[in-house]
Length: 49
Image (cartoon, rainbow, N blue to C red; front, side, top):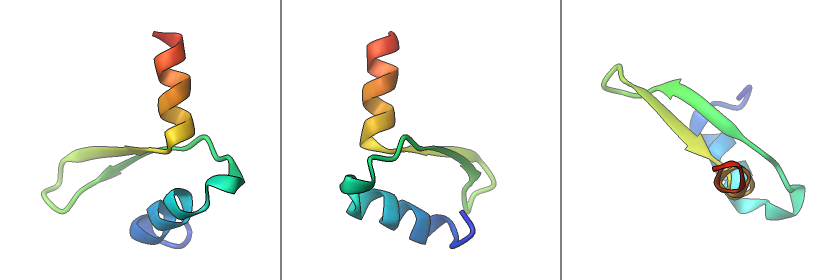
């Protein structure tokens, strides 16, 4: 996340060829914990359940 949250999410979402397994946990604008998962990570988590 060196590029910042929004740019990191953009890179992950717009570059599926990178085949990234990403799960980001961050604090949103309201001061609450939030998360973001790449499509690959969602598949991995669904397989484990």
